[in-house]
Every structure is written in C-alpha cells, then in structure tokens.
Amino acid sequence: MNMAVVGMIAGMALGFAGYFGGFGAFLLVAALGAVGFVVGRFLEGDLELGDFFRSRDERRR
Image (tube, rainbow, N blue to C red):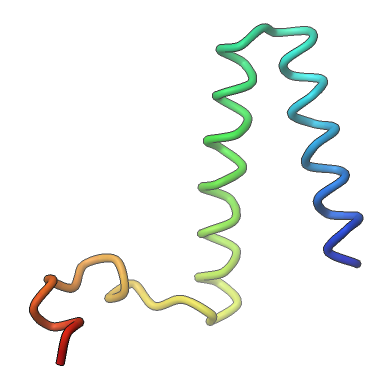
C-alpha cells in the first residue's frame, strides 16, 4: 500500500476519534497507532530490541 494512502487512513482514523470521542480519544488513537507502528517495524525486522535499550555511551562508539 502506498505511504500516502496509509497516512490518509491514519489521519481519517484520528479525525473520527477526535470528532466522536473528544481529545482524549484522539490522544489514545494516536498513542496506539505509534505503538502499532513500532511493533510492525520490529516484526518486519527494521528495528531491533537493543535499539531501545542501549546506553548513551554505546551509541557514540
């Protein structure tokens, strides 16, 4: 699926959540979407679990 279409669908979902559920629902949908994005990237192999848990000193080397 084209990234523009994915962005449009995500925007529409956030719009519906904001309109029908208020600002709290908007934030919940946005947060769950971000978590789903990270999990999807992890399952595809684009991210590794160690990327989130490295200390600052290890990244500079």
